[in-house]
Image (cartoon, rainbow, N blue to C red; front, side, top):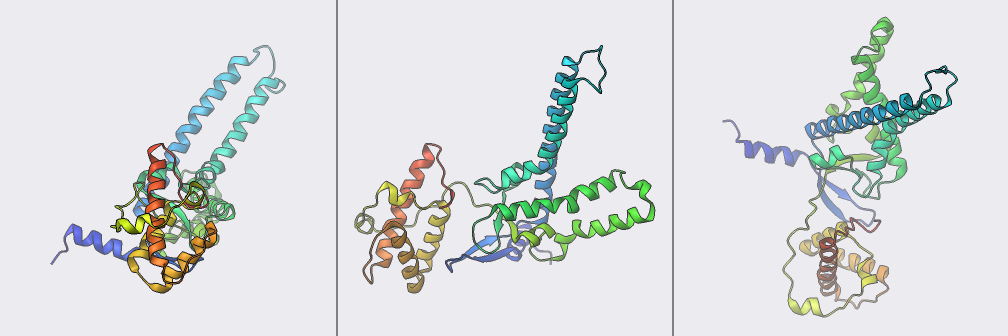
Length: 296
């Protein structure tokens, strides 16, 4: 019997389900981005990048020719030379800066990734660092741009050596198809992976007893320490209801905000902190202020 589309989708999601262990020892579920979604994100980013590059080059060319003195030589005209330098600089920044700028941002995703619901994350569960983003994007030259150069005809005159080089580069292009996490060579070098981004809207709140929410009072400074990511981690800990994890997380939070907690009060404290933090974050979101995580 042929599986239904829904069953096939569930099976695909199950194959891509992973567990991320944070430096604090907490286990978080996530879903690795699919190969089709990653390819779509890359195509969208290249289209955006090429479109923006063409627009800027047309503007710079118009400025250069508009200021060009027809009676002077192009080799000695300072205006035209200045525009040429700007064109070369922009081409360099567009090629490398586009991916670095967006992936180093708070969303850790380029516009293409955001459109298909993906983001970059560190495989060790820690914060995505600048070194990781730089490493994975420098590898893109070998994985994407050089193969495209050969495909578009840049290597046709290189003979056997050129096509041998292209076959070698094609190995990098096909790399995601030979590992279960669809990792690029750049992801392996940088210690990153591309995962499905969590929804911008916070999930439905847990049902908490009113008396638990009113036992503790938290100020603005205490609630500003954490963000949406930590809220979701806290919710998972409360749902799992494991005493050891409750104690560990309660100690981490109280240590961060300068509180002391009595033995046996962990769940009551965490439920109160969860409710207060959720209200704090949702209130800020209504005014357009987002705090993705404690690093934001």
